Image (cartoon, rainbow, N blue to C red; front, top):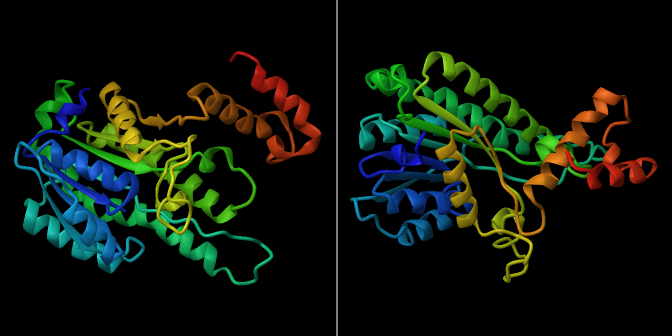
Length: 299
């Protein structure tokens, strides 16, 4: 498949968490390609700044904004109304990218931190799918000739996951659980649409270390980017390459961790259940030497 079938003049994009980081980088890429792009964010200030910094597309690209909380179904109704009024209900690219990370601990008797994280990271995705997928599938029917002949997709859904939802490192169970569930949702969506709407591609974007507001770039952390991290624009470059290959899995490396290392870490984590090891064995002292030997091998 060709990513150019999605990123082209006249197409439309809807991006959550689109006012900063990866979402904004993706939105700018869409606008530059000539796409009409709607970004969704709950932060009014960053939305306004993003609209002023949207750049321009040589093919008539334009950016519009809407303030919404992805965890609230009623806010998604407002998004759908805007998509119908501004885009005629047509969505070629839906990026469900909004996310948050709030430290969670079982020592805290108040489960609100878990709920807030899961409401945004998981239900932000579920709400977006259940609200907008009918529009995407309806448009796919109108372009059914592409799917029946094996042509390029007419639309794509990008869901932002996390490596923490796969390798499950200790320290933030709410975030890890939310992203593990997002991975499961994306896998099921890909399977279902391959049968029901094959012209709709699904991609699970799994970033590495990216310099965004979520990781410290705009949240009171250092103003200087870390050497080990990628810029959001690098993630979008990598994403477009995997989309062009027709890949569901978009497992991004960074300047410190290679694709090969990521694969080994994921293999080890999945082996806990297969081999009857203690959970999260990679971080347990008793498995330290075994993990080191495994990581040193070719797989």
